[in-house]
Image (tube, rainbow, N blue to C red):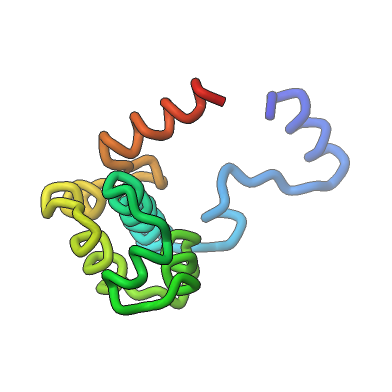
Length: 127
């Protein structure tokens, strides 16, 4: 949003917030926790795709269901951190990839594994 649009909205009585955590009134810790879980879910999907597995095949490896894998990858709030980490490791993510996701997890959701970044870019170019 440009400055003129922001000024116009504020003049009309609207409050413009900089980001979602301001809008929802989240603390930095709450925002970091959400971003951490989102980064780990991206890692799970990346590890599954790198292994050439469907969600159903991944579910069998995790002794779970395809719908649970979908919830993991979709960022469902009911998915625990330990499930995210154990799923990533079980599907082939390295400890270093998990550590990177955790270390960068509070960085406004910007953290992704290097492989996940290149995979996403390759898909964008191919589309």
